[in-house]
Length: 222
Ligand SMILES: [Zn+2]
Image 1: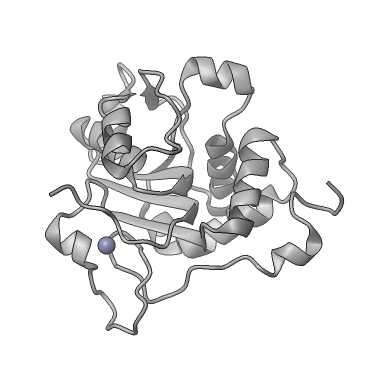
Image 2: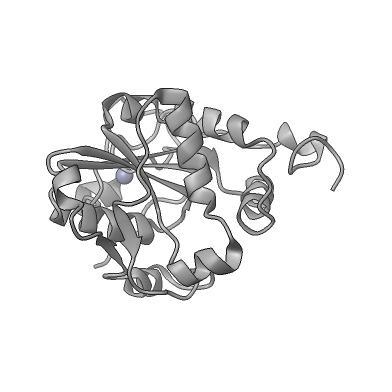
C-alpha cells in the first residue's frame, strides 16, 4: 500500500470526525441541534453500564480501512495521529481518569496476532496525557468468537462474563476512575461487559474512549 500511512493520501480527508452535538452519556451523534447535556432516547430508556463514551471518528468505509490496517496488518504508522484524535475527542474523560485500561484480547488470540491494537492506542493516549496505562487489571477470561456478523443481542450474549478483573487488582481500581480504550464501539456490548467487571471490582467510574464508533444509537434490550 503506497503512501506514508495506512490510508491512501486522498482518503485521509474523507474521514468523518464526530462532532457535537452528541449524547452526553453514550456519545452517539444527534442529527438535529440540541441543548448541551442532552441524553439520547436509548440512554434515557436504559443507561449503559459505563458512564460516558466518546470516539474520534464515525465508523464508515474509510475509517474501517484504518481500523482493519491497525487490527489485522499491525500498521503502526499514523498511530500517534490516531491517539491524538482520540485524546482530543476524549479530553474531558482523560482529564478525570486515574488509569487507562485497554480492552484485552484473549491470551490465545494475542499470541496468534502478536499484538493488541487497543494497547497501542491506549499507550499513545497515556503518552499524550500523562495518565498511566495498565494492561494487567483486566483480562479476557473466555475466548469469544469475533463479534462481526452478530446481532446486538448476539454480541451481548457473546461477551457476557468474558472479562474479569485479575486477582489482586481490585485494590488498584477501588474508587478509581477508569478510562477503557478500544478501537471501535459498535453496539457497545464489549464496553459494557468490561465496565461491568470493573465496576463490580470497585471502580467508581468507567468511561469509554474509542478511535471510531458507529453513528447509530445504542440498541436497548426490551
Ligand atoms: Zn446516549
